[in-house]
Picture 1 (cartoon, rainbow, N blue to C red):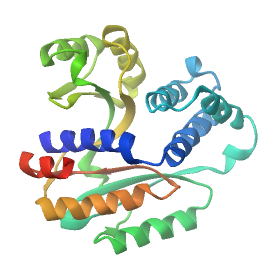
Picture 2 (cartoon, rainbow, N blue to C red):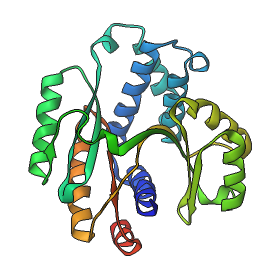
Picture 3 (cartoon, helix red, strand yellow):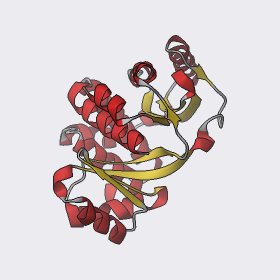
Length: 248
């Protein structure tokens, strides 16, 4: 799983460097609005909202933007958002999960299908690749919060299931239902995380060479460019050499 975790870190950093701030803020704000609409508008009483606000803050979303997104949930605007998961295959037979939040199911399905088709993939039925992933909580810390042993001990004490550390940082995994509690405990031990969110963690992976990985990146970036798409996950694996070339 080393290649995949490094890819996650590359994507995480790349997103901070390259993505248009307005598009990123829009996706994070939408999650806050929907989370607040589905539960209590107080983050302390709504675990999903608390995590959405935490992720927004870690991506430097201004406080007033977060507050507006919560207030928006009290109106009628959030009622029309529907959460949809699409599953398909990318270049090289890599499994891809696309999570979307939309007010027009037909538009989003058409766009996602078209994007897969134009980038060497094909959209499948619901459940076609989901069995290759487990729903987990993921918490990312920078490398300088501590060495691998220190972070591993903190993760174990917080109730996490696993911790992967390398020169790029620390990625901690926990049960999806435990993310709020584990992240709170880790925050007390290690400080603010770089990212805290629910993910689809691959249970089986597909090896790609550089050309295949570049084609997959093109598909992922095209999907992420869609305003309705919130998250894209794949199960690709690659050698350290390929990962370094991608990072460069």
